[in-house]
Structures are given as C-alpha cells and as structure tokens.
Image (tube, rainbow, N blue to C red; front, top):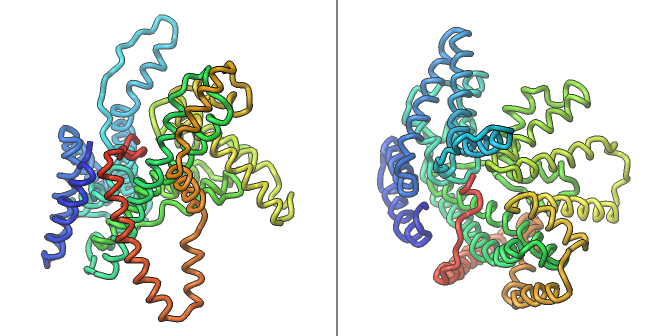
Length: 477
C-alpha cells in the first residue's frame, strides 16, 4: 500500500509543496523531489525500492554506452531491452508462465511466489523509452544520473502512469520556474481527478462488484448489463481520475505531462477508441513496437499481424492472466475488422454516427467484461446472461433482480447520470463558449470554477470520511 489518502492530502503533499517553494536553488528542488519520490515509493514497497534504483542506474549505464561505436551502441540497446523485459518477466509473469507450462503433460514445475512491485510496468517502459530514444538520436545522453533518477521516480506518475517519455520532459528536468498560476491550475486539475475517483468511480463500482460477485447460474440479463456498464464507467473514471491527479501534481511542481485520455467513450469505432484511451500506452506501443515491426508500410496482411502482436502484448502488459491477453486480442480483432471495411463505405450523417457510437460502446463494454472477469468461465457466463441465455431459475431471477434494485438508490442513479454526462466533452464545450464571451465573463467563470473546485474538494472529503475508498485499479499494473 502507498500512503493513505488523508496522509497524502494533509501531510505529505502540503509539506512537500511548502519545502519545494521555499527552496530557491533548482538543483536542491530536484534533490527534494527525488528524496520524497523514493520515500513515497518505499512507504508502499520498502523491499523493492532498491531494485528500482538499481534498474534506473543500469539503464543510465546503457544510455552512456550510446556514446560508443556502433557495436557498443547496439549492445547497450540489446542489454537494456533484455534487462527491462527480464525484470518484468521475473516479477510479473514468472508465475503465469509457470502455470501455463504446467498444463503440459508430465510437467509440474513449482510456481514461484513473487510479490508484484507497484507500477513496475510503468517505470520499466519509461526506462526502455529513454535508452531507445538515445539510440535513435532523438535525445541527448543524460550524463547526470540524478536527472534520470528524477525522471523515472517522479512520484506524481510513478505508480500508475501515465507513461511519460523522457523527450517530453527533458528540458523540464533542468529548468522549471515556479508559476503560481500554473500551480493553481494544477490544484484544480488534481481535485477533478480526486472527484472522478471518489464520487463517480467508487460509487458505480458498488454495482459492478455486486454483479461480478454473483454466482454464474444466478446472473440475469439486466444485472449483467448494468454491472458491465458500471465497470466500464468505473475503470474510465478511476484511471482518468488518477491521470488527472498526476497531471495536476505535475503542474504544481512545474512539469507538464501529456494528456492520457481524450473522451474515449465518444468514439465511433474501436480504432478511434484506442486513439483516445490510455494514450501514453498506445503511443508507446506504436513508437517502439508497431512502427519498428513495419507498421502499415508492408501490405495489409503484415499490418494485421503487427496489430495482433501489439494488442496481444497490450493485454499481457495489463496483467499476468489469460483474461487480459484475450481482452487485448479481442480489441485487436475489432481493429482488424474495421480496417477491412472501406472508410468511405458509409456517408457521414447523424443517424450513422449514432449507430457507429452504439457499436463502439457495445464492443468496449463486451471487452471490458473479459478484463474484469476472474476467468474466461465467468466472462462467458456474463456474455450469455447479457444476451438472454442465463440459466437462472425464476426464483433466482427474482432474487437477483431484487438485489439489483436495492442498490438503485437516488445517490447511485444521480452518480450514474453524472458519469454518463461527463464521458462527453462538457468542459471543452464550455471553454469554447467562453472564448467567444467577453474577458469579464471569462474572469467571472474562472473565479466560480475555483470556488466550485474548493466545494468539490469538500465533498470528496466527506466521501473519504465514509471509509468507502478503494485502491486505484491501475495500481495492479
């Protein structure tokens, strides 16, 4: 576990911000961020923080090798890829691979019990991207190991992303003037992220957890759909909420991270969905795997194979389970089908756009059932119930329906409605309207927005005091 919410909000973060703003020297501010980031990670993973530091130093050495001759540079790249993937395999996939091999006849290997370090998928991908970009010549070799240490350990995005590429914040590691207006914007963005998590994600999670906790033979159509939709909303507001918090915290300390979500549930295809969902992961796989494999430059057949490879690994990246792998392959299948349909097949109009959106969200919801399920047996039972093939007897149906309706209280229904509304670009729409308004109107809105943020923070504290807070979903990845 990392810091509790109250400890982080009322002790850790205020203390770090005050110290950060009081320190005049930029090098000392960097040292402070490194120290508190290591403390932040060590609080939850004291035995693994040394491993993370060793890994960073190893990648620092691999980066220095890029100053050598061609064969030394290639060796450094190969060593970096092997080191980072071996680290992932050892801590994240050793048990999964062993269990899979044990299904073979006459094979009974002992299953290793290795604790999964929080955020290992994120910081290993960041380390790999640094070395690869140095090899390509996209960035200069970082000869100061402390700057590389700061880049990877920076606590706002350390444990659950987004995946920040070194080239995106290279200059910010050296020069970040304190900007109080940006700090205020960061606080507001952070509060929005907290509200997404506590008010929306954790509320709809109750229904999702109830549905997925039902015995397969008792699940009915309405429960299955409501549970699947609620989980689809939960994972979006949970993960985008964490990303908002990371971006807000980054702004407080002078860093600007790229957006990780762009209203993915407004998409009209699964292809578009993946351009808007977890953008940092999508672009990472595109830059460092899909394009090096040939991308779409080597014919349609090779393009399809490349997409399947990418989505197989995207699923595996999320977790050591076949449900994640199949989730990735299902998304790859939808992208493959969409690539086979000519883009100008249908003329754009409102009716067609609505149908495309319904198709996209149906596909996304069905895929997230697999993502959430304990195993494929549960996922298949969920799908069967969703399409009216539930084996539940009439008495069981009545019990399941009663359990579902008991949770449909006014607070849940209000939150569900808010969740649906805020999956649409309400904020950009308001901002576009304000651009055409007068300067006085914009200033008034800014004041009201900050006052609203403070009120929203107060509501979040009430939710925290209820003790219903649950860990972020992506802490497991």
